Length: 231
Image 1 (cartoon, one colour):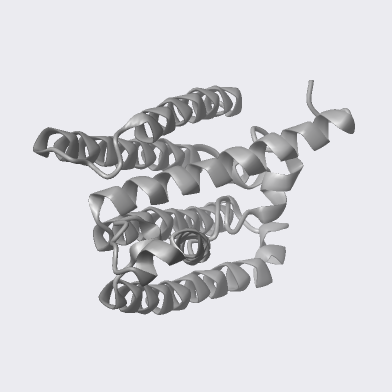
Image 2 (spheres, one colour):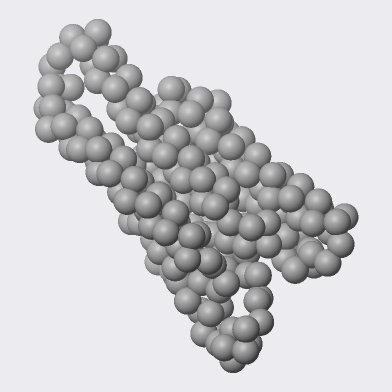
C-alpha cells in the first residue's frame, strides 16, 4: 500500500466511522426491549471492529513506511500537533469519560437527587469509577513506558547517518515495534473502557469519542484551508 493508498483508505474509513456514529446516535437510548438492547450491542461490536480494522491496516503501513505514519499527510496540522507516536494519546480516553460523565451528571442533577437512574455516562456507579481510575493508572504506566522507548530510539537516531544498511534496518524495525505497541495500547484502552460500561454508556462513549475526532479534524482542516495547505 502506497502513501496515497493509505490516505485513501483513511478517508474511506473515516466516512464509514461517520456512518456508524449516525447509527449509534439514532438507536433508542435507553433500550426498552430485548431486541433494542441486542441491536445496541451489535452496533457497539461493529464500531469496535471498525477501529480494529483501522489498526490492522495501519500496522501493515507501519511495516511498509513507518515514517509516513509520523508525517501523516492525510491529517490536518492540528491533528498532527496532537499526535502521540503517530496517533492519539490513550489517556485521552479517560479525560473524555470524566468530562462526559460530569456534563451529563450536572444536566440530570435534579432527577438524580430524586433517586431516578438515568443509565447514561452521568450515572456511573462508584464501582465503575474505581475501575476506570485503576485502568487509567495502568494505562499511564504503559504510555510512559512506550514514551521512554521512543525517547531512547530518538537518542540513538544519529546512528542512522553513516551506519550500515543492516543497522539502519534494525533501527527502523524497532521504531515500527514502538508504533505497534502504541497502537495496541490505544485499541486495548478503548476496548477495556467499553467493557467497564453498560451497553447504553458504551454507545454514548463511542459517540463522544468519534465526535471529538470529527470536531478536531474539521476545525484543523478549516484552519489549513485558510492557510492554503489543503485544497
